[in-house]
Length: 145
Image (tube, rainbow, N blue to C red; front, side):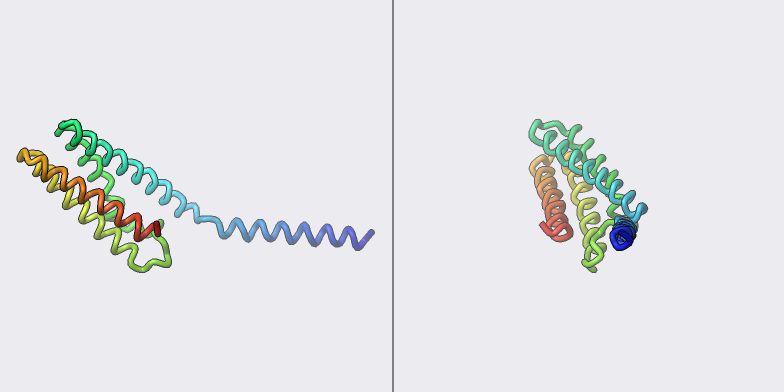
């Protein structure tokens, strides 16, 4: 009976220590907040890209401009040091790549606004294509798709 009781106690202690160890390996709460914020911003970026595309397909320059403003509003996260909290730690280049991508997104989106205002819709839609390529490039390299 004592052996059975001792076995139960030891297995309970082992299980409890395993649970505590597992809790420590869970994402740091600060990192979890950053991930949540980034996911929200990524959804906003997707919404912005959809709005730009819809505006282009329906010849609505106002929708395109609105989408660009939404997109540019989310770039501050990619341009900041906050992005380091959610990037893969094993990819040394990830931070610089995210910064470069944000820079290119800003460049193409600024050019898109200028093209729209000048009435050059072909150029504006080419800028949209370049924006989409930047998004895809970042997701392929950093998210390992």
